[in-house]
Length: 269
Image 1: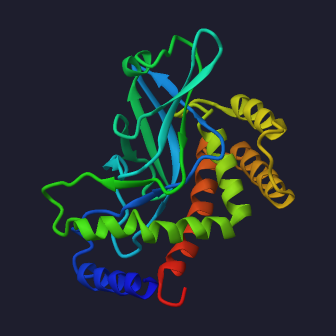
Image 2 (image 1 turned 90 degrees about the horizontal axis):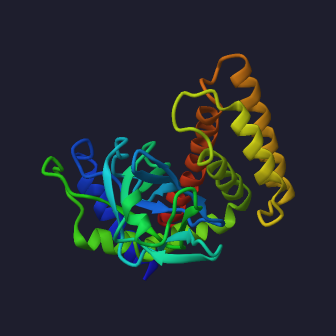
Image 3 (image 1 turned 30 degrees about the vertical axis):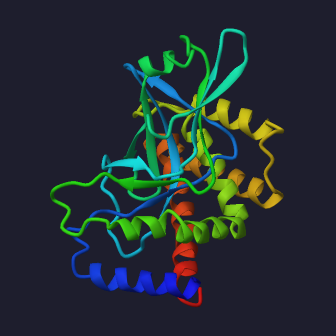
């Protein structure tokens, strides 16, 4: 079965190498959330940023803003705290909007704030997004896509080949834990050019001291190192905001994990 999948990958690679510039962008794998990611609601839209990996090395990376949809079987939940303090979860994979954020390293999950109210969300109540294992995102087709995704391609990459990516995550534990920690902090900082150092220190300390978010000693050392790098880069003006620095560090880690995913998908990987 594995040999058959690799032959399919090779065939897709051959077909699209000469047309990648005009082809539909990559199918993305949504990285499962170890902890719910908070939603931020501004101007009637509630959104959260989710870490992703590219599942198709031979296809082009999506441009920021490219629309996606959740792949079949994706488990994406909206968690809403009611007036009684009880949090309830609702399946929303078919109700959310997905857009590429920074090429293949992240997407933005968004919903109208009005739709959250239908699930019992009230002003200032906490709401978050959870992503289950094996979730994928498929680019919505555009007329300008010269080499669109085929149904067979989608089936393979959100199924058996997606499983290979998931298995790779398990062998890259330190990097995945570090990436997840950065993603949680990023989602708690202003999504603009506001001075966010105070917000960074507050949320970094809160998340680092949260006993439910256990990091291995190596991952804890790594996130501490990144925090120091970003503090210094922000201080000397190399980073416009702390969020921008964390995003850069996050994307570097996600790209390194992606190299392992691509290698695992190759024959003999």
